[in-house]
Image 1 (tube, rainbow, N blue to C red):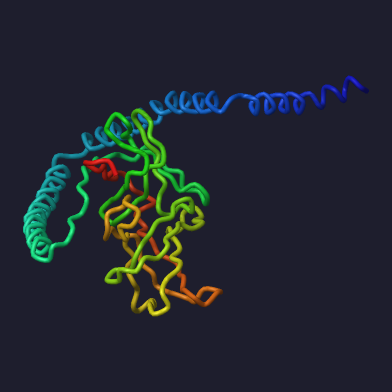
Image 2: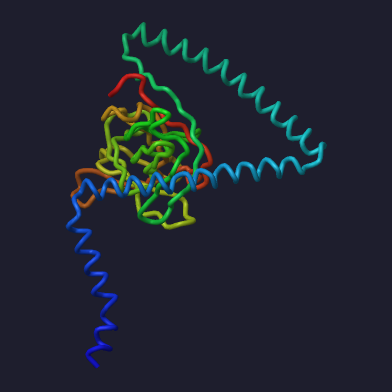
Length: 276
């Protein structure tokens, strides 16, 4: 009987010894082990990403010439639209520069844009994260803003040699200063608990009492520029309802985020030309 009890409890004893040894290991050794494991795992995920692109390539190669020609015609139309939009953008930039000089307004911080493909997604309720296929080798730094055509994606949380991990704005780990479009007063923005396969949401807090939002009159929420991380005016989401907070001093409400956040394939990282 004692031998049988010892055999039954042996896994628990072993587990306890492993935990004890791990607790006694210096923090530096733990961090080195974590980084080494990640750098060993990263090439596998990056290779899988390249294989998916190769699969898409051969899928297109198997299409008929008629389908490829039609896709080319559609792409030519889109390219023409983007060329026209680029000309309008250049004209608007010149106008903004003239107004800033006339009104003696400060210009936005200069950033370099680094495009990156999404390798993996971790979109559970607690960890709203992306892994992208760019890292320290491309100049990425911790805290760099990540954006897409719909506004802010998140902020770089970890940087490795060839990959980086991004905390998305739908994650409750991310908090930043925001403001309503057309109103300079700062409010607090924080990601929420978002179940998988649901539209991402966040929370706006410390909203002044004289601001109102409703489904018929939603308010756009943008970055305020405070904190020196995110440039001012980047879109975060839309607030469709504001309610008084329990203390009655402010309002709070849920922020509807862009549904495309859950299916991004490519993002852009803003890297400041001068260290912040």
